[in-house]
Image (cartoon, rainbow, N blue to C red; front, side):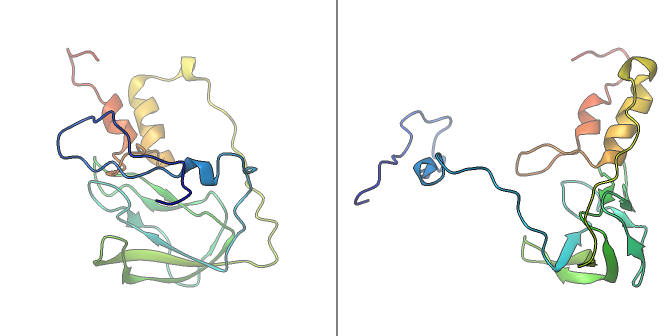
Amino acid sequence: MSGSTAHISTKLTFKHGVHPEEFKDLSADCAIERMPFVKEYTLPLGQHIGAPSKALVKKGDKVLRGQKIADAGGFVSVALHSPVDGTVTDVDLFPHPNGTMQQAIRIAADPFSTQQLRGTDPVDPDTIDAKTFTSMIQNAGIVGLGGAAFPAHVKFSIPEGNTI
């Protein structure tokens, strides 16, 4: 490519893998900016490998930023939280990034909200047991950053007698 300093990695991690140019030079010197809130959000209930989350809200419900709006749909599943203060405009099938139609929650952001995130009291990790810890991770909606967005609590659910 003409004028580009990017290159294809010569350190291959596996045979026949795709190693596209990274183009980090395009943003390496840019300041970090907060992404502005948009007018509407569509939140798929299937955001991770495993069972889709189960909606706790319905059309017309007011929601707060950080509020749990869906429960885990099974062991390999996590809760989902609202990214904004707003109103649920629909819980229905919507186009999913994987090309299918899937259940999702659509929220119209409240244009008059400060979108202030309401904090919760921190938990002392030394005062909870492993089961409570993994439950908190699942309810927080924490997943891995890989392509499958694997629910993190599963990795902490170590069968009796095993170690990691």
